[in-house]
Amino acid sequence: MTDQKTEGGQPGGKQTGANALWGGRFAGGASDIMQRINASIYFDRRFYRQDIAGSRAHCSMLVAQGILNQDDGHAILKGLDQVEAEIAAGTFEYDPAKEDIHMHVEARLSELIGEPAGRLHTARSRNDQVATDFRLWLRDEIDALDPALRALQAVLLDRAEEHADTVMPGFTHLQAAQPVTFGHHLMAYVEMLGRDRGRFTDCRRRLNESPLGAAALAGTSFPIDRDATAKALGFERPAANSMDAVAARDFAMEYLAAASILSVHLSRLAEELVNWASAQFNFVSLGDGFTTGSSIMPQKRNPDAAELVRAKAGRVIGDLTALLVVMKGLPMTYSKDMQEDKEPVFEVADTLTLTVPAMTGMLGDLTVNREVMEAAAGQGFTTATDLADWLGNWACRSAGPITSRAVWSNWPRKRAWIWMACRSPICRQRKAASPRPCSRYWGCAIPSLRGSVLAVPRHLKCGRRSPRHGRACDMSVISRRHMLGLAVALLAALAACGKKGPPKRPDGSTGMKIAPEKLKKKKR
Image (cartoon, rainbow, N blue to C red):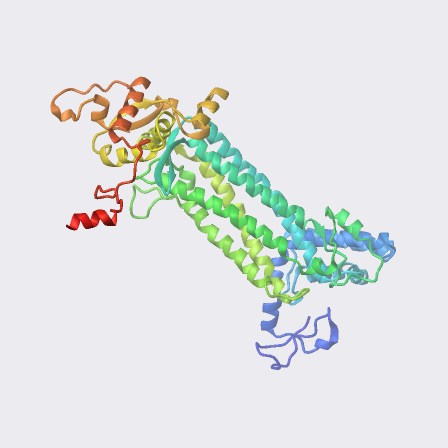
């Protein structure tokens, strides 16, 4: 394409000659700024392998159908091999005037083999061509992502097995709630990643339909064999509707949606690593390979890799939003707006190729501080739920309020540690069915800590009102019989269970109405 010597005509600067693809009607050519905004070769060159594969399948089908002779078909296939080799070697020259990868391949093919190259475009359009390339490329990306996710799951499983008996506090609202194991905690992310892999698998299954043969939007009058091209490219079947074939981008949206959910899961795990690696938690220590130092504070070890994984979730979610907005108002079928469908998908694919291996490396490299975790599990009355359940099994339905009042009134001031076996029926069943501790599944009794640790008032354990009365307090372990006695004592003292009669107001009155005749007598 040669530049015109005349200036002006269109804003943006110098015009160029007519595009060979649509001929002399546009003899004035496009301005420089039009070429820059119109060209997609800057990013869709990634499609070159998929574009050449689609061209090979299309050429072979044309020959088989008698639309293209054998000699021309052989020349085209040989020329495509050379074009692919040049691009792979980095010697291929790109020209923004040729817009996209399809035009670049065909232009170079024309230079190599001459006139037969023009017959390759028989019975197809750039509309079905780009849709085919996009589906092929995205299918390859999903196939490459699944082993990376499986490797991440494997690391989580290994660390979970290693720390099946490492006790830590489980959190709700980021407040210590109940004791669990570190292995049980990690297994939650294994489940999340399993669902993520399922979403990508579903996405791949739905996108695996061939748009090739839909042409611009309404198919072609040539006797093509769409089943043959679909089979040659590994598609499950040809697209059922030619207009949908070139207009649909929901497969890209679905990919971005699955990637967004995956990124959210990775971000949550990264957030926990950032917290756990802090001095305040000190649950884990991240390795040198995934941390950085400070330029001014030599003692610092910054969890930069985890923070970047956390941050990149925002970019992925933003890319999903961008594509949704691009597609939301487009009429059938193809519009140039849809050229903006590729960059968000490319960015997300590049992001996942970084974040997933980074998370895998961090988890494999971290050191778990068992003692710190176990000490934290014993703080904050994390086994109060077990006490409430135990009281509920032996006493009344007000066990929860009883335990709550005991914890928040007396226990923070006077505490002692006692051993209490797990009373959860589910836990007992799990423990009987498996040689491993039931805490691996439910986080209740922890044998490694000699059972659940339970904070109780010192004076309740000693049987005295207060240790300040001068007598020594025996810190021996309370037996189950004593625990039963403790529960009965609590119930008797509170005297709230099963009591009948009208409810009382806060002032102590019953709130019963006085009859009018009695009220008159009272006035007299």
